Image 1 (cartoon, rainbow, N blue to C red):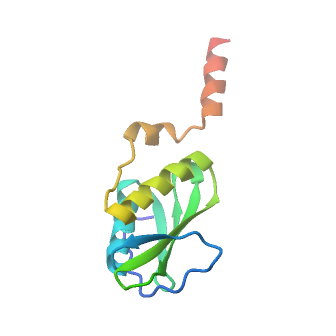
Image 2 (image 1 turned 120 degrees about the vertical axis):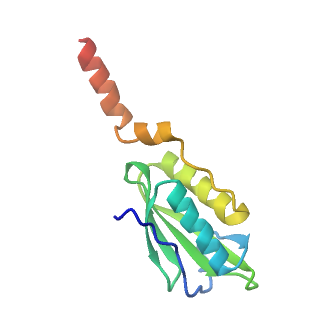
Length: 136
């Protein structure tokens, strides 16, 4: 992926399927897309955007994959947002879910802790094994 991070410019949203639990957010489609894009950028997430339907497929820390989907709401000034985990760590997904929902609902984007990003490259099990092998 290049250093240039594109901004999401979704064209269309459709009705939300009944099986999804959507959160209604105040803001038009362009505003919500911009918030998601900025959250992706600040949290160092890789994302592939599809504009019609409005879906962003994301890859976070330790290969945690999730999808941000936008659907129509009752008015044009509201968007229904669904964030679903595809694969990966439940704890990392939960943190990303909270960060993205804060971004789309309130426009508050929580940057990732740099220490957390540095520690995420080596799984804890491997760190523990390496530590024990040095002491033995």
